Length: 377
Image 1 (cartoon, rainbow, N blue to C red):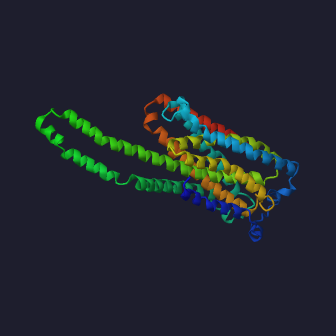
Image 2 (cartoon, one colour):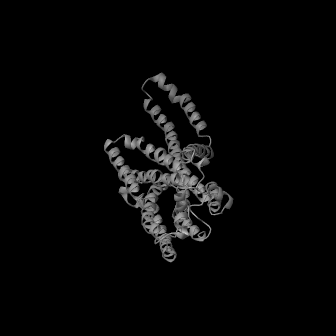
Image 3 (cartoon, rainbow, N blue to C red):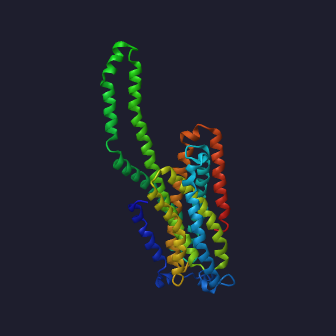
């Protein structure tokens, strides 16, 4: 992850700390008048049989290394696939596995992150005005998707200008040189005499264009990785914070298993994108580190803020709800546009109906599996 991307994550930490800061005056204004809502917004300390602080702490301490290992395995599996011939990026099996992982990322946005945002921003613990009068979740998700499009486009332009140099000028000069070459004139003068020479020179001129196209695609793959990782990091820290601050054994126990599978499959999707970006070992290590440690970091942060963080406080609901909505919009855009549409409209899948159908089935399996997990996580 580039220093620019790392700096863009600093506001996330500020917002999460803001969520843990109590605002008595605002909470008093947001206090519900409905007696039923009073129970929902009550301090979790009054929970019944599910509240067990020592057992919850033990489960959270188990969750941190377990989720960390599952995340590392998931994101590293595609990176070691080059040693398996059938799983190399140019093989059909890799395309099918990547389609499965893309379905996982798509379902993460629609089935996990977006419903959480709706629950947060429509909570009875928030004042009816303005939170009950406007669909803030859908609005923020839409803005996040548009912002991701703008960021995607600008980052790609930046990379092309920074590393492309005067490629277009070189291509134009090569075309002019080809037009004015003696072989070009002899083609008109002597008919077929130098046809092979002209064809060879035309192929030589076309080769830089092919190289430049592959370089542009590589830059695009790298932009996809950085933007996708940013959205996953936001979601992972938020869900880890909620788990770490919770004292309910009934909530944490199924969440640990579900989060392990979630991180495993989501990591496979991100790992496939990292593999196609062809980063060096240092950059791969940074990306793997950020993905693998964000959820455990969120759990640790939740443990540290247990005394002050209350998930039903108005501030926490608003901050977490807005972050979830933004993350959902980003994941929707990346999964549909940069991963699924780019592959399904690309030459490899367009050239084989059988591979298209297999990939589509893999997408359905990945999205379906993550949708089932939404029951617990």
